[in-house]
Amino acid sequence: MKSQVKENVKKHYSKIPQQEGNGCCESCGDQTLNVNEYGKNIGYSKEDLNSVPSGANLGLGCGNPLALEEIKPGDTVVDLGSGAGFDCFLAAQKVGPNGLVIGVDMTPEMIAKANENKGKVRATNIDFRLGNIEELPVESDSVDMIISNCVINLSLEKPRVFREAFRVLKPGGVLAVSDIVLYRKLPWFIRKSVNAYVGCISGASTKDKYLEHIKAAGFEAIDIIQEHSVDKIFPENDPTIQKLMRFIPLPRKTIRTLSGRYAGSIQIRASKPLTVTTNKLKHLKDKVELVSATA
Image 1 (cartoon, one colour):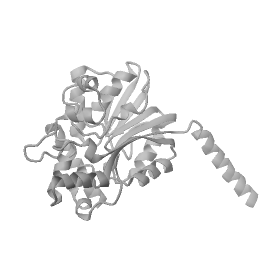
Image 2 (cartoon, helix red, strand yellow):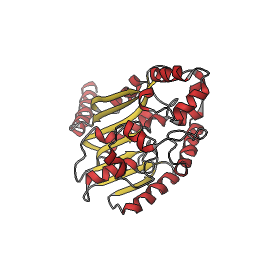
Image 3 (cartoon, helix red, strand yellow):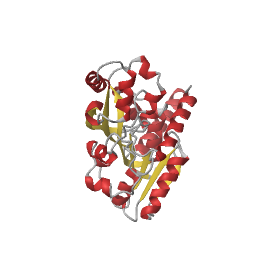
Image 4 (cartoon, one colour):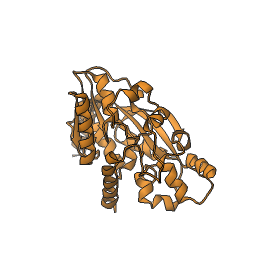
């Protein structure tokens, strides 16, 4: 079942580079998403939106993870689920020529689109890599910051995603993510819908469980920076909202109210402890001493 859902998600997102402006879901009728207006709505400035190559912004985010932590010149940044490269291009401007931005995406079509966009601006400090966010093609302890924008909710192995993020970050490195979380259990007809899943809805964890996964991976100083109900961030013509309206035989105003009660966009910052290596060594030493004492 897990493998089938993942294939469905992968198949869906592989089509999006040819369907620019359709948000998390496929186009619904003649309704499409104005990606620039939507970008402003979720926290990007007009300057941000105008500074990236055309075709990089596909309207797939639910916040601005780059606003959660200052990126410094020379930093190495990894974007989980980088898509056509929107956040990567913004991060690349901040890390400068001596830094590196690594975008990881699971679909060859997205990687191809991102590299096409990279060629438009001749960026030399961005590396797009094909791979899964549950098994990152990145060396351990090599990254200053990890960003992700409305992608981790799609993974069926969220604890593994956060463990991988922890692994590749340097001690003191920062995790900054924008994502969709649930406030309560979804109705069964939405949970069972693949369309709702690839639309960033039914694959989401509850808010408490999401935070538990981050803590269990080893992160500390976990802070919720911003939080909005989905009816506040998604415009009326967003395909995700359109899908909900088709699923639920209720007035539109009622559906908008219900969607805000069930799900929200959350922006989280967390850090990898500076003393993580020392703590691990101490833990191993304590285990050895305990074994010796009972031998």
